[in-house]
Amino acid sequence: MKSCLSFEEVLAVGEPRLAEMQHVGDIFADGESAEACAAFTQQVRNVEAAVLHSYAIAATVARKADSLEEVAEVWKKMSTFCHSALAILARLKDKYPHCGTTELYDRVLDYKLACDKRYQGALEEKQCLTIALPRGLLPEMR
Image (cartoon, rainbow, N blue to C red):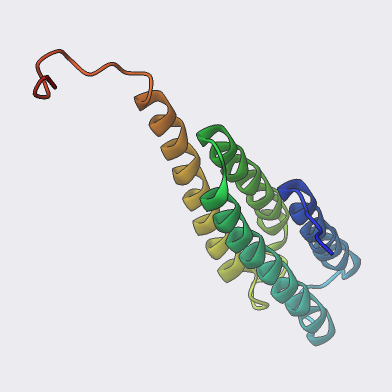
C-alpha cells in the first residue's frame, strides 16, 4: 500500500495543537495557578512537538522537491505555520511566563526565521538560474 500526503495535509495535523493551546490558554483566568500551569505546559510540549516534526518533514519534502518553486512553497507554508504559533504564543506568554511559553516562543521564532531564510534562498537560487553568464567568463568550448 502506498499513501501520499501533501505538505498542506502534514501541516493540518499540527493545526489542532495550536487551537488546543489557545483554548487551554484562554480557559484559565489565572496563569499562575499550579493547575493552569500544568495544563498549559502540556500544550507547550504538544505545540513544540508539532513544530519540530513539521519542520523536519518540511526539510525532507524540500530536499526531494522537483523544482525550486516547490522548495520555496514548502518553506513559505512552514513559515506561515510558525507565524500562527507565534501569534498565539505572543498573546499567552505573559499570562503563562513560568510554563515554558517564553522559551517555546523563542524556539518557534528561530524556526520561523530559518524557514524565511530557506524560502528567500530558494527564490534567489531560482533568480540566479535566469541570469546569463557574461561572455568570456568561462573558456570557450571548441
